[in-house]
Image (cartoon, one colour):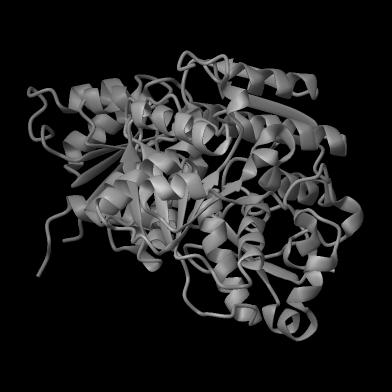
Length: 126
Length: 390
């Protein structure tokens, strides 16, 4: 069973780039274009890692992270969340970490780094 | 003529055409590196002939990216002094200590080299509008070269950037937007505007040619030392262009057959302890940096929470058996005073950070008394006179 990576992102170019990168490593790629859709997919599909854009069209990524960390949404408390943003606002990184993200990356996303970051969050397979 | 042949992605190795505008690799989003036909260059170039040319970094033009010399935007950049600093060396117990003083460049900092190369190349490729996020000095340099070339310039910089940087940019005709944030936020805004409105983004390593200008520091250094490289180079590291570029240049010199000895310097990255992502990653043995949160230091050029070229910086440090070291703002200011008091060099805080780092490396015996050491003063302290630290 391949590991599942969910990317919540409204920019189709970024989505396509990351989808190609994740599928190249054999991960099952899940996509959501809005925050609310992302929460729904997360609950239904139980991804192993979530990649989260901050600037989303409905609720922002901070709110998505906070809701994912809400104990009433079962099972998402410990799923690794990597915030990925264009970093255009002061304190994006600090706010993302405070909201419950495990890691912060700014765009453009270096794909080699992303591979290593995602891999580091996944259990080792012998 | 330039021996430039192509660009190569530092991540996946994909090749890119140098006759059209390039940014970074669209596939893996890693920086592109300029490559040259060094086999032909080795056969046709005489390293000693370069010394006879008109001073300035463009005397190395065969190894720089502009194909037609008519596009070179020259303001006198390069060929900065390599100063022996015996009084300082004696105080530290070092017999062979030098400062490469980049403050004599146009606009007062080493940024002139990179921006001269990048804006010249952009002009050659037909670019009319350039945009840059900056901690300060790169903005001033870009504004100057854009003015020289008749390009429109747009600059995002933190609102607490030294006043000199703001004013030098504006007087050169650039539009300056002061932002409530750091260079990382400025980069986000510049990238967004570039995408939305078609400006060419000259951010560190998001275009391939600033590094080419910076690499001339290494050629000058090698030439000045009779093509025998120093043992240690101590370099203030924000975006890290100069460090990466010099490491690339040493490999080029080797391929050209210009070096008298094969040994290359140990590269030292100095950062402020309020923003030390490279130091943290180097110490942890990571291949890339974590984003540094709540970055703060009086050395504005070192307030870079994560360089786009972090992997290249760490690779250079590791390959050179170098190291990375963090220093406090108090240590930087004390070093700035020492450089001025003992040697008459009024260094920028970033440049002074190299002395602060050196002091620690001597104390830890990482540096030996007889070694040949070069500190890079990347700019003039005169640009920072309005800062609170003075």
